Length: 168
Length: 168
Figure 1 (cartoon, rainbow over the protein chains, first blue to last red):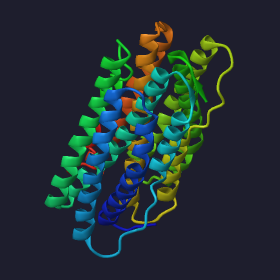
Figure 2 (figure 1 turned 90 degrees about the vertical axis):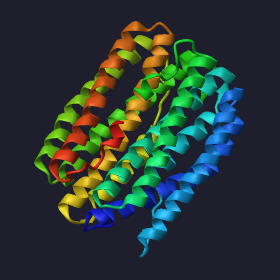
Figure 3 (figure 1 turned 30 degrees about the vertical axis):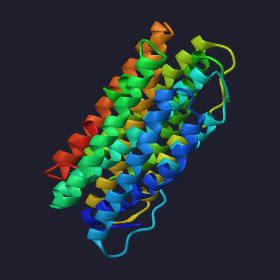
C-alpha cells in the first residue's frame, strides 16, 4: 500500500468500502435466513436492496476516479461477518439469537457509518462534489438502517431496548 | 455457541468486548509508533491507558457474572486491527498515513460504541445495575475518544475535517 497523498487515502477508502459492500451483499441473505422475527427479516431484506445501491454508487465514484483501483479486500468487514456467521449458526432461543444478530448487524452499520463519514469528509476536502453527494446519500441510509434495527429491538422483544445507545 | 437466553447473549457480548479490548491493548502501541502527528500520538497513548481501564471494568463484570465465561476471540476487532496494520506498514506521506490511521481508529471506536451500546442496553433490560453503570462509563470514554480523533483530523491537517461525519 502506498499513501503518497490524500487522494490515495480517498481511493483506498472507496476501494475498502466497495469490498465491504460486496461482502455484505453475499452475507445478508444468510443473516436473513437465520433471523426469526418478521420485522427483522423484512429490515434485512430491504437493507440488501439498499446495499446493492450503495455498491452502485461506489462504482460511479470509482469510474470517476479512473486509473488503477487498488484491489482491496476489506478485512474489517470480513471479521464482522465472521461474527455474524457464528451467531447465525448458534443453537438456542430464537429471541436471544435475534438479539445477538441485531447486535452484530449494528456493529456492521457502525463500521459503515465511520467509513462513509471519513470518505465523505475526504471528498469534501478534495473538492469532489459528486462523490461527496453520493457518499452522503449512503451515509444517511446506513444511519437510517441502524435506527431501524434499534426500533426493532426496542419494539420487538426488549421493552428497554437492545441497543438504543448504539444510536447515541 | 449456545444462546438460550438473553443472559447468554449478555455474557457473550461481554466476553467479545473483553477479547476486543485485549487485542486493542496489544495493537495501540504499534499504531502510536506509526503515527507522526504529535497530537495523534498523544491521543493514542492516552487511549491505551483508558483501554486498560475498560478491560478492568469488563473483568469486574465477568467476575460478577460468575460461572463459565465463553472463550471468545473477537474476529471483528481482529479484522479492524489487520486493516490498521496494513496502513501502519504502508509507504507514503506522513500526513496521508496519519489521515488513514485516524480513519482506521475511528472504525475501531465505532465498533466499540456499537458493542458497548448493545451491552449497556442488555444490562439495563436484565436489571444488572452495576454492570450497566460500568458499561456506560466506558461508552462515554469511547465516544470522547472518537470525538478527540475528529478534532485532531479537523484541527491538524485537514481544514474541512477527515471525519466530522463519523461523529454524526
